[in-house]
Amino acid sequence: MDVSPIARISQPPLKNARGMADGLEQAFLSEMLKYAGPREASGEFGGGIGESQFASMLNDAYAQAISERIDLKLIPGNGGGK
Image (cartoon, rainbow, N blue to C red; front, top):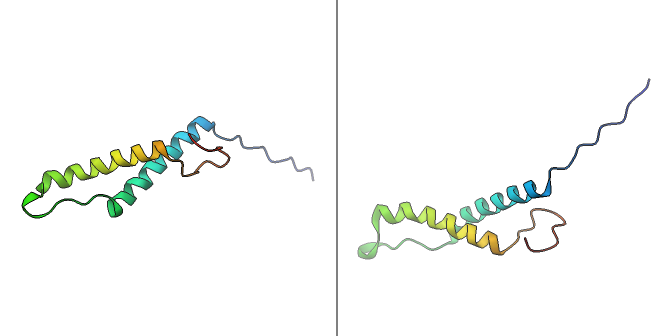
């Protein structure tokens, strides 16, 4: 019985993997900021429904800014910063 070797699977391009890792970092940080980030004001100084709608967009913007400045090392062997 002749068994042929298993074909080697090529790695995705690092540029594509880096983009996916950046997106995953942003999603992770956005979720963490929902629980640990700035809180909405309540009472007379609260913004009501508009503030709660804007808060999710603000969390996403914070997550993007943070992920651009830090590296969570989702790509092994990245060698440091982005």
